[in-house]
Image (cartoon, rainbow, N blue to C red; front, side, top):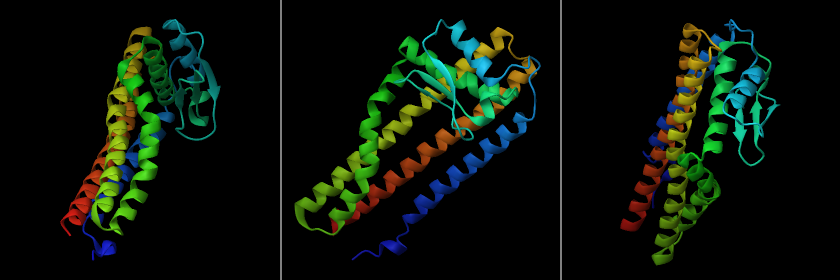
Length: 233
C-alpha cells in the first residue's frame, strides 16, 4: 500500500505552489510600484477604458467599478468591463495599463479572436475537470480491478481538460497585453517612458498565468505518476 502522506510526488505540488507565490508576489510589487506613478494625462482607469473601447468602435460594453485589488476582468456574457478599487479611479500608469489590458479582451471578443472563443468553450469542462478529477482518482485508488483503472484514467482525463484551459489562457492574455501596449503607444494616452512602465506591469501579470499553467502541469504529472503506480500494483 502506498504511503501517500510521504509520497515524493508532493514535491511537484510544492514546486508549483512556490512558483505561483513568487509570481503573485512579483505582480503585486510591480503594480504597487507603478501605482504610485501618476500619468501625465491625469486620466483615470475608467476614462482610459472608455476611450479605448470607443476607439475600437465598441459601445455596448459597460465599464463598472468592482471591489478588490487586481480583480479586474472582462465579462463577455454580460459585456461588462470590471475595474477594481485600485484601477477604476486611479490616474496611475499601472491603472491605465490594467484597464487597457482588460479592453484588449473586449476587443478580442468583438473581433472574434479564436483563442478567446476556445477558452470560453472550455470553461464548463475545465470547471468540472478541476472539481471531479481528484475524487474520481481517490475512489479509484481504494478500489481494485478494471473499475479502479477506469476511474483513475477518467480523473486524469478530466484534469487534463483543466490544464488545457490554462494553456489556452496564455495566448489570450499575451494578446490582450499586446493590444494594450499598442493602443497606448499609438493613441498618445501615455508618454513612451510611461508605456515602458506599463510593459513591466503587464509582463509581471503575464507571469502569473505562466506560473498557474506550470503548477497545473506539475499536478497533472503527479496524477499520471500516481495512476501509473496503481496500474502496476
